[in-house]
Every structure is written in structure tokens, then in C-alpha cells.
Image (cartoon, rainbow, N blue to C red; front, side, top):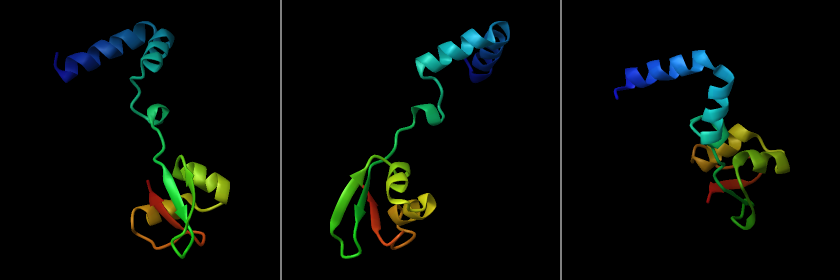
Length: 91
């Protein structure tokens, strides 16, 4: 089946029973958005390079430490040297 046929079939299915279609898609994990995304572990170090702690994601690290999400991400990606007085690295 080509992509256009698949799309047309999905549209018809949704128009016939939108609520059931959404439930099925959600339960099957077909969403390719935020629902199935998992955080990437982040490591926190002091400015001397001493390990402090590990977090499940940047979001989790920022909730606990109060650091800025964007700045921590930039440090992890090598665009900045530090954020909120700490060094950050992806695990």
C-alpha cells in the first residue's frame, strides 16, 4: 500500500468513529509525538569536574535544581560551558 492509500484509509476510519480510532491508536503506541518519548539521562558535575548526581532527563534535572532547561540542553550539546554554576553532560 502506498502512503496516500494508507492516509485515505486512516481518514475514513477516523470519520466513521473518531473516539474509538483515537483510543486504538493511543493504545497501540502509534503516536510519534511526546507520549512515547523518553528522557535522555543527564549527569551533573561541579565546575571542578566532580560528579554530583544523575537525572533521568533535562526536565527532571531542571525541576530538581532550578536550572534553565534551554541552558542545560546547550551545555549538554557543547554550545555552552556551564548552566546554573554546573557542568552538564548526557550519559
